Image (cartoon, rainbow, N blue to C red; front, side, top):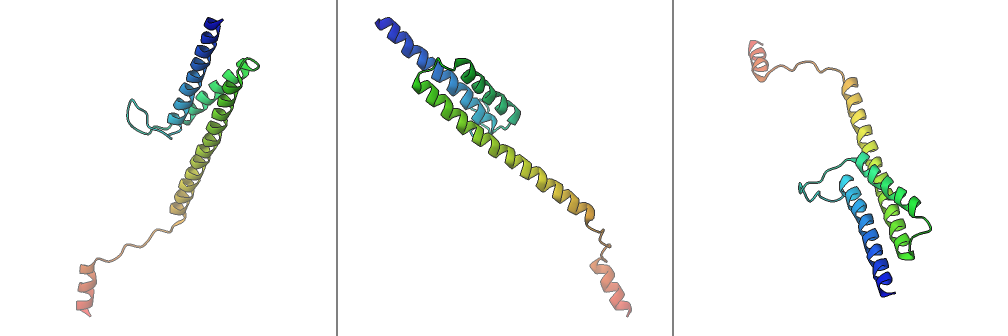
Length: 128
């Protein structure tokens, strides 16, 4: 009986570690925390989406087999990651929009006539 209880505790601990592994990967991939291997902020939203999708798959495949604590942790983790992911997508969209507007302004801006150098101005005023 005690062995069974210890095994259940061990499995819950391992399951929570699995969730945290994908959670940490997603935070790194969204650029929210540093990659400990490179000590740099790295951003790869397609990989972040994959990590979140893995957690969604785990949730679907384990439905009805989780303890209340496991379900609560998994649900909260997914909610936090998805909200932050949407925020990162919105940042990307705004940045692309800003760049497009700047490029459009450059195209619309008429070419300025070359300005006379100070030396040319001085020479022309001396001739007068």
